Image 1: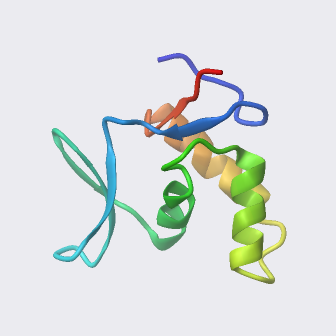
Image 2: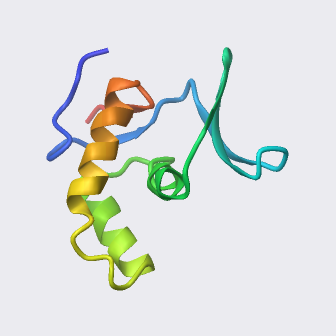
Image 3: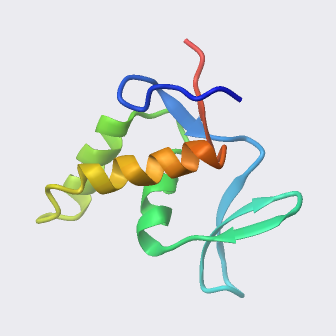
Length: 95
């Protein structure tokens, strides 16, 4: 899969992965055929917003609204989304 511009593209969670709360792990996870990935709280907050097509700016705005006083988290969100893109957890939405 090719990389896309996280600043301008719409993207969503890769359909190969299922985002869910895992009671046994007491955390959110990404399930895929070969296993699961345990997510930190902040990773879960970001990926939860990727279940429908979204943009980086939308995610940052939603997190700033949901967690007042967290302005300035844009770089952290972009860094995580870059990693998620490299891991192919997120994919570009075709226009």
